[in-house]
Length: 340
Image (cartoon, rainbow, N blue to C red; front, side, top):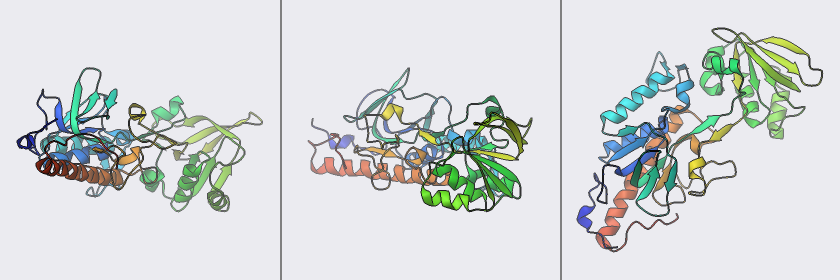
């Protein structure tokens, strides 16, 4: 269709219609999504964050955050996310506490549906993150952030010189145990099977580390402690006998699940369901970008997620500028998605 190039104001939608037509829509409200919102809004782009019914990502389950720059005394995870949300809103982003239930990326403007509203956008940034897998026992839920963690890099510092447990048998668990071995007194690496599933080199490193005690064929019955973790009750899967282990911290490392269900068959995902990254922030759909743990299976840090949110917003801005330039030279061409 013919497009009047005068409509291409970078601060306004490229199409007429109600309030829910946006220049940029960001799905997700962790460090990646809110950083993207800050950058997009400051670029004077009409920006909406569809935050989810519970905003803030995994940091909402984190107590002390001491590795996010700028907070010399540390900061509580929920407090950090509240500050990031307030900053995004102050610079002009609109944050909507709804869940995206359906998307259509087959044509532009892209369409995103919640249970009650429809949003359209010229560019979309996916920042829905990944959820850690848990043991699903009541004591684990009660003690999250008070000795139960899924991130050694984030929380290992708090257990200097103490005994901790790592639960899992894949590369993630082996990496967590090896990392913690440089900080804590002793790591009890607990796996329910009789052999690790991780790579051979990681297995060798863990098994040869004198600070790592491996417990095979061992299941978790309960995490002990009232206000904070004091130990673990474990069960020998072969004999059925239980015993208590004294540990101050429990690191659950049984994997993560990317929050990409709504995007299945809409963009290119890898075999584990993570968004396939092209370049720094692009997906295979022209105009759809990605940031944070929804593609990052390696670092999974608040600061790296925030950095990728910055990249995605800057790339989205450049993308929209290129569409304006293309329309000025070829006003008939517009908004047909194409692959990178």
